[in-house]
Image 1 (cartoon, protein in one colour):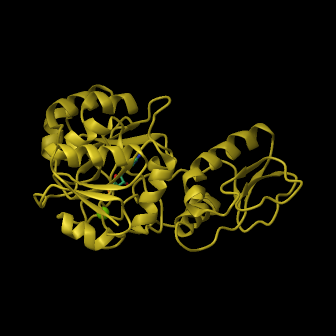
Image 2 (image 1 turned 60 degrees about the horizontal axis):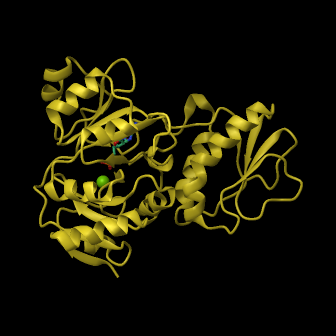
Image 3 (image 1 turned 90 degrees about the horizontal axis):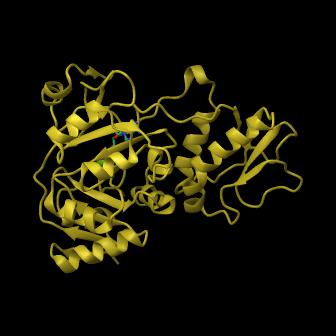
Length: 328
Ligand code: AMP
Ligand code: MG
């Protein structure tokens, strides 16, 4: 049962309470309705991918009520500060190097060392974010591959019964998605054109490069992000680890295994998704420290979140010079 919460103090308080409890709440922004979850909670973020039935993990935008909150999560340089002063709140997302101890879950960052941050302009969204007091991940509140919802009714048609609540702020001003600007490197790169124009951005920080394809029809989310891949090669469909391998286990781990990280001992796909990037990072770093040569990954069933988990594992296992392209 999905609650339809009114745009008043009571509705806001309930939406904030649910989000802080790790539940899913759709909320209006100036672009479309976002599917919100506590961005610091790996399981809540995994639940977003499950609700959207997304077949892959792409990095999500963390929404915060003001620039100060954003710059606690990402390392801001002069360009980021100038853009925030000029264009936030608004439809501009900044990709910054994650700060040490960045609270945004690794799953929301698709395992990357960068974090995408935005201060939305919608008054209800900002009031909600202030009340939650934590960054909120919020991709569009639709099932993967369907159109983005601009009313609470659309959200209920898409995700009714699947999410806990929708905060009903009436129709969104049908807008563009946010522009996504990558400031994690020396050159500023526009990964996705959107509500904040290239001209508006360039008037603040000077010339920005356009990512390949960013001038075409929007690419699938996540296509432009350099995907996290462990350094150690991955071997798929392993039933056990060889002596020179670390084991990424799913379900009961075989006896006698050495360095092991269990995604979910009980075979729970949401738990496994929530632990995936943490596990890959751990085995990669600790495995190399111990002189191991590979990560052996046990099979994960190909349904529900297993699709996205297997997509990520396949990419990590592919030879590095032809990683399969990620689609929409
Ligand atoms: P959406 O939330 O569906 O509007 O999509 C978020 C967009 O931000 C996608 O195009 C992502 O690829 C992009 N994005 C989010 N985080 C990062 C990141 N750390 N690096 C690069 N792109 C990102
Ligand atoms: Mg979408």
